[in-house]
Image 1 (tube, rainbow, N blue to C red):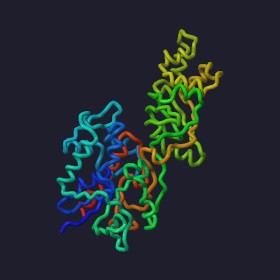
Image 2: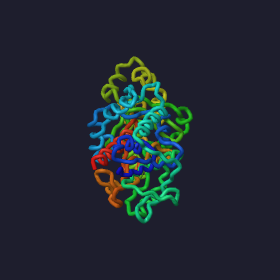
Image 3: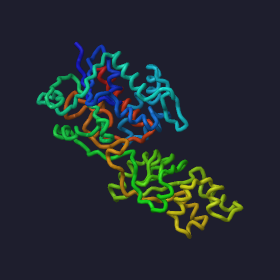
Length: 395
């Protein structure tokens, strides 16, 4: 007789799990609170659908915090394995100039989701919609919509984090888990906009402008990429990747200092040499013509470097290589791309099983781990789903 697997949630981790479970061994049912699967999957696709990233797996793993948590899971189902599986079900991918992996341009996010759903249908996976999990009963059976009790052999929670509540991941499950004795860490923002109190003149001129080909450092971490100047502060891949370090600064010091290298392709000495070799005596012209700095980069220097320092090429070169800005806050939880917090990693075993409740597992963003944007979040969710499926298949 087949054993029953109940999966609560219909996001990436859940559908990956369902796609890889052995249909000969298990009766698999997904319980989704919305009217359709993958709402967050589709929302994420609106900004450029990064399925994963193409970098070597050794450095790929180091993008995660803590990196040790997902190491074996990612090695077991890597970014290359993910691309191979997508290809096997009819989703061709390509590597963009940013080294991120996308579905071929003709393939829309909804088509990727529908293709994966077809795999679930072929595997005999049942999907029940409008099912909100509310608790366990006294026998550790699932309770949906406050009064519907469901017995299962294995229960897998894939309830999401605390971002984008409109998609269903509202974190309402936290109190239920806490009551059950599971150690819960409050949600915090990650991959979000960070607040800088800009000078009025600067933000009036440059709000909405991108700052490209830079690197940003915070504490001991550096990230290349780009950001966008907003009235609130900064957002973009170069600042998102520093979320753990920025959170630490805000928590410990109520501020986080970042250092922006406006010209990472040139050393300090090379910048000074360009100033000295230039025929022009106008600093702004040299910044524009010789160093190829954009209007917003020059605006940053003119606003946040003293006039005396701006006119001294040695000091100005130092500022170009390390312009300090202070972050004073972060965006609201629901405005972040992802969150950290949720189920403490010490409360699950190596196979994602809850130590407090036998045969109950947690995967995906509801666990306390972090990763930058660019395909890393989605890859981790799929890898966890596949890893747990293989574990259950082997039982």
